Image (tube, rainbow, N blue to C red):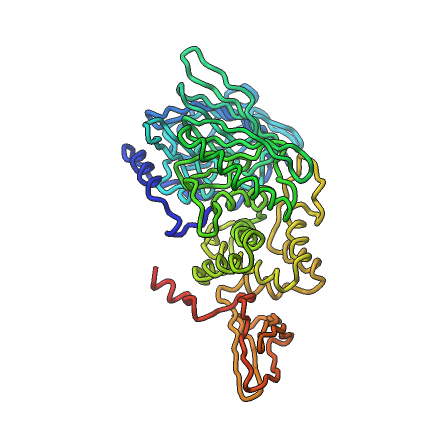
Amino acid sequence: MPRPVKSLWIAAPLVVSLLGCASITRPPLDPGTAASGGRLTPQQLATDVLQYDLTLEVFPETMSIEGRNVSLLRALEPLDSIELQLDAGLVVNRVSVEGRETPFERDGGRLVVSLPASISAGDEVAVAIDYGGQPHVAVRAPWDGGFVWSHTETGEPWIATAVQGSGCDLWWPCKDHFADKPDRMEMHVTVPPGLSVALNGVLQSIDTQPDGRLTFHWRLGVPISDYNVSLNIGPFERIETSYEAINGVQVPIEFWALEAHADEVRQMIDEDLRDQVSWFEERLGPYPWGGEKLGFVETPHLGMEHQTLNAYGNKFRRDAHGFDWLLHHELAHEWFGNLMTHAKSRDAWLHEGFGAYMQSAYSLDRDGEAAYLHRLYKSYLGMKNCTPVVQEGDPNSDEAFTGDIYVKGAWLLHTLRWLIGEDPFWNATRRLLYDTPQPWDLGYPIPPIYRSSEDFATIAAQEANRDLEWLFDVYLREADLPTLIVEREADRLDLHWEVPGDRPFPMPVPVRIDGTTTRIGMESGRESIEVPAEARLIVDPEMRVLRQLPIIATCEEARAED
């Protein structure tokens, strides 16, 4: 997901989405709908989602939908009811189990379906829910979840969904939790004539109804987090090409673009996307979803990492580093977020910290050290350090989703890479993603994997052959940064760390003395070395170590500015 900072906000999408929702009044979302990935209830824990089969018709003029979703679930223990989620603002018209209408209860966003007969562990059951209404409208997509009802410059409907924070239950009945990915999904969406539907997975057919409406059938054959399922409707042109992945497979490339921007998209594919995906594969391994597609769709909001069909709304702009950062960031999430998914919400930095760091790493390989440090320095200035990156308490709380999971997460990786070296760092990263440091020949499908902060800390320590728990403890579990105290007197240099929580922190420090850089060991958290009194000295001359410096505000100062 793009980082929610003011400098990245684009005014036009906000204006059109506000215009779209001005005609209807929306009550606040039910708390159960507003939060995605919360604590699972016993009934939710007792089922495993195998497949969703979603049939939907979209009515742009009334900003409404009508549909049916069939959830195929496997019981993990004996059950006499099934719990799913659906926004209370949508109406449930009928519920059936294996074709038989069955009673149900609704409590806000919770929907509990009574089964006609109890089922045993291992049994499968299909629950069909017919529903409809006006789905929740996003005011500030993608950071505020819901539908975006917009129009192109020539007046055609241009519609998108972005629901990372609130989840699938904003627009279809589902088990709203990233910890239970469906193994596959069928999607049949009907729209007015002249519009196209772009979705995750592979397009199976386009059927024309007697009155001219079009039904698009998409099939996704790999597991997916439900918030990544994305509906996109507009007068799109489907731009198709392919590339040869690092494992030798020809991977389809699809970009669903507004017709007026088709030439710009073709240029971006040739000049940006091909180079970017090749770089990701060389650093990380095969594009994860090569059996489906490498896809993007043009959206009226900024962007989002929708697996196999990333949302793109950056208007084909390159940043000061000469490439499209949003294209790169959402592509990074195909690995960090979609292939490797955080085990708990508090580990979201594994998605966003890595996703943000990849732009700096790409700048290093593309343009050199100055470009790498420039991008990192700009992000360092935006650090807040008001809450820990990995918070205690509810592991699935969305409160951990702050800007620091991007910038502080990226800086942790920057320091870790310097500390343990190139091969251990990239081997650990590939193991985090694929469970092997040598993924180059993996064929499709590549299975997704759940990871925690502890998993990555263990893997990195194994690759570095040293203890690293202290590093992750200080950078992830403390709000404040460590401070390096530097004292120079006559011919001596004294260094010591002041660390939040008085945690151990044996972080070495690079020191440049008369042009020669030496790494000073700090095993006890302090060190004293002889330095000629007349020597020119710079501590950490290339900002390799994440620490508190006067150039960034303290938490209190940051709060005052906000």
